[in-house]
Image (cartoon, rainbow, N blue to C red; front, side, top):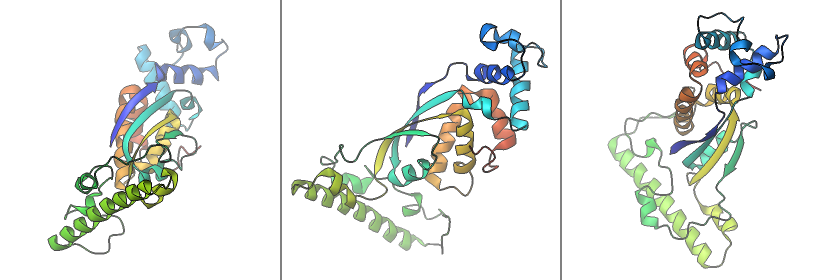
Length: 246
C-alpha cells in the first residue's frame, strides 16, 4: 500500500485560527490580517499565538474550527477488506476503483501466487506474527502450509475469474469469485477533525493491521500539513476513542 497527498487546504492552521477567533471577535475576520485577528491571543510571535489557540481549542473540545481545512489522499493497493472498514466513516468522501469496469483479465495467476494483485496478510508468512483473536501459536510447518493454502487459493480464484470472463460473464458478476484481499485504488477526502477521529479509531492498538498502517501513513502526511495540531494530537489525544466523533 502507498498513501499519497493529492490536495490540501493551504495554510490550514491559519484557517482554523481565523474560524475560531470569528466566534469571539467584534471585527469581521474576513477583512483583517491574521496578525490582527490573533492580536489578543497569548504568545510572543504569530506562531506562538497559533500554538496557544490551537492547543486551547483541542484541550477544551472546541473541534468545529478543525472542520474547515480539507485534505485529499490517494491510496494505492488497499484490500477490499480494508476498504470496507474505512468507508464506514460516513463523513469522509470516497472514490474507489471499480471492479465492474476495471477487469483483471491480463494478470498472471502465477504472479498473484507470488504476491501481485492481492494483499498478503503477515499471518500467512510470518511465524512470529500474533493476530487478534488468534487461537494458538503456529510452528514453522503450520506457517508453510498456511502460506501454501493462501497463495494457491487466491491464484485459483483469479484464474477462475478470468475463465468466467472468457465464458462471457460480465466483470461485475465474475468479480464475485475474487478474494476480499484483492487490491484496489482509492481517493478519499476529509477535514482535520474527521482525520483525528479516523485516527482515534483506526490507529488504535486493537485496529486491524492494514488499516492501522494506512492511518499511520495519513498521520505522517498530516503532521507536515498541520504540524501544531497533529503534534498536540499525538502527544495528548491519540487513542481516546470517539472523543472527536461527529
